[in-house]
Image (cartoon, rainbow, N blue to C red; front, side, top):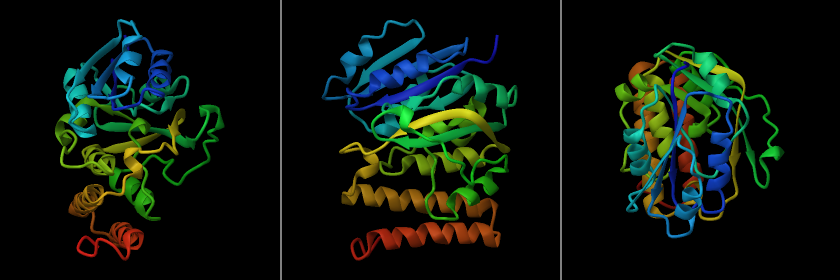
Length: 269
């Protein structure tokens, strides 16, 4: 029997999308799978949509609203898989993603499998999956430099399949964060690994353009979270790599923050 995969979905007010996300997991051609869904106090009909699924592979709970990071941590604590995939409630796994990634990481406990991704706005079939500079096998610091150098980092959670010991070493999600919490978390997790392994054909369709999504928030609280996440992520990389390329990638990220928010939030800039 192959290693057990736990797919973990924190869900908040994703009534329109959670069903498709769950179906995309349950339809995976992988024989040893569990799906953990934590409804984070949704005020729409998300909990009812989750309850429609009676598959024994699903573990689901509802908690008082505590934020994405707290819900992701709760899902992890409920899980039992040897391989972990965090997954947003509005995204879609394309067929065979789990099988391909599990095959790529094989029996290793020190390497992370990373798949292909692309945005879609209406239908997952609209995703085209172009080649990207991060589609490489690399040491984690080199992968992060490749991801950050253009100041448009992408650490969308469903891209990665992670052996459990790496997460246990790196620690769980930082509940202080709201905006770009995934940037901070996956920087830490990737740097706790020995290698990032690209898995061609393992595809994630990333739903974009949703009104009110976390990634679109621009409140003061959200910008403070973005600033803290960037500071933390940069500090993690520079602690292990102070090469010119690493420093340039970090500088580009911080410069983009200044550019994005000028002339507001002068204290954070």
